[in-house]
Length: 239
Image 1 (cartoon, rainbow, N blue to C red):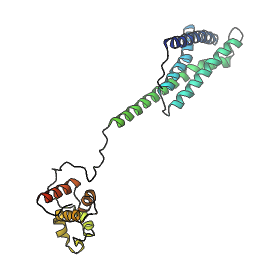
Image 2 (image 1 turned 30 degrees about the vertical axis):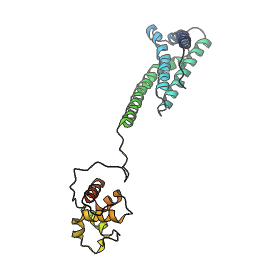
Image 3 (image 1 turned 180 degrees about the horizontal axis):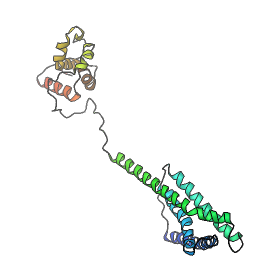
Image 4 (image 1 turned 120 degrees about the horizontal axis):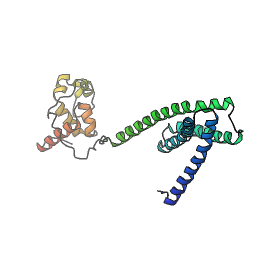
């Protein structure tokens, strides 16, 4: 079922998100300032934390069913936990400078976030590459199924009508069990030079499809059909 978000729902969501980010920004900026970093850095510190939440949320939505979505969820959980912990610390800690351990945590967050965002960018590139490969594979032309024996086939003009079987097929030709052809007693050279007649005899004997005969003789199925059609036109035995 195709579900669409109404304008009211979208506006309400954006408004609440903006208010939440604003309040969180105020608390985190004050906490960073009390941790001893400069005013400009303290103003940017909440953007690192809450910005990482937004980036991870977008990755969760856009990664779909890709395995990298687990990493996006992990990153989102860590960023959200850091933001919540920072807001809780701002509410519980007394006014003035914070404990050195908390100041150390505040100082560690920016480089860790930068590392996480760099890795997320690499993962996003890999996800897009996998998606492009999947689309290209889906859009590639499929191999046509082999036609049935009863379906008309195009003539294979690349092969001569009297094509001889491949050398490695001679042994198989000798072992063909057909009443009309005593292949086992025929010399190998004769079998190799009379592939067309052998194919016609196999067609006349019945029991084998054109594809099977082509495999036995060592030529293409189109060549066998061309031999059959020419034999029929000349009133020679043909299936």
